[in-house]
Each structure stands twice: as structure tokens, then as C-alpha cells.
Length: 217
Image (tube, helix red, strand yellow):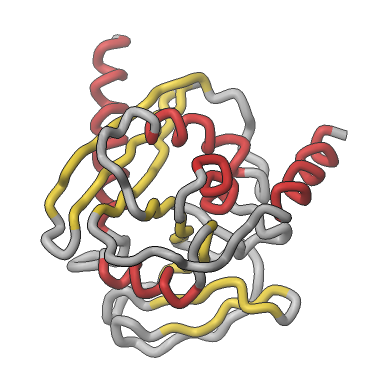
């Protein structure tokens, strides 16, 4: 019954998805990632300025992990702590990139989409692995991609962000389309497979985790 309720929430929120990009020049992009320590969830947000890649601001939030990991329902586990970390930012962020999927989800309600609807901001999902859909392996050069289709509908892309490295899976969350999602992910990628905002958020989240673990010893 609980899963049925969650599915109903996802289906209701799906009606609010807007996959159009109305943004102009992008200056500040934020990456969001979550680390876990015992029963705690630690969300970190890293804001960078492009094209310089300067780190403008970071924020984090820690709260009890109140929802188990259930495939297809990651947003119910991570969105709360991420949104609370976002609320602490002073910088006006243009786009948020989340370590998860957007509409490349059975009900188009991946972490990036769910969060994007709640914060009313453009969001992009960038995941390390496919959750659902079919695709072909893209070319080996940076920028090569192939569509990810779910029930014949293109929901995102399998994108090569670095030569000779595994691709990532990019899908729009909210207030953005596939084309601009891909463009922004490539803009944010330098020497690593993972876009810089998410990579930095991951590093900072784990630093906070170690600090808190030391304090709790």
C-alpha cells in the first residue's frame, strides 16, 4: 500500500513537469550529492561559476535518513536533505545538477525531476548507470551520445564526457530540455568523467561525513 501511495504521488507530480528551457546566459551551476553516515544523510551543494570553474559557495545539511532505499523512489529518500542544503545557499543558482536521473524513470520522476518541481528551478539528472530504458553505446570521443528511450520516447542520453571513459546518463529534470541538459553537462566537464559541480559536491559531502564521524567518536 505504501508503494502504491508513492506511485500516486509521482503520477500527480508528473503533470507539473515542464521540459522547456527559458534560461539565457548561465553563470552559476550547482551540483548536489548525498553521503550517508550511520542513520544520517549528509547533502552537500557546490556552486561553481562558468566558464572559470571558480567555486563560489558550498552548503550542507544533515538529517536523519527516514526512508529506505527502494529503486524508483530515490527522491523520497534524498530530496528533503538536498532541498534543505539548497535553502542555505546565498548564491542565485541558474541550474542544479543532481547525482541521479530526471525523466529517465518509469514515471518520469527521478531525483532531479522531483527536486526540480519542489524547488521550482531548472534541474538536470546525471547518473553513472542506467535505471531504465534502452540505448546503444555512443562513440568514444567527448560529446558523443546516443538516445535513451523508454517506451519509444526519448527520455535522455548516454553521454561520453571523457574519451576512453565510461559514459554517463543525462536526462532533464525540470524547466530544461534534453539538448540544453547535454550542453550544460559538457560545459561542466573538464578532466573527469563526472561533471565538476557533482564531483565537488561529492568530495565535500564525504569531508563533512568524516568530520562528523570524528566528532561522534
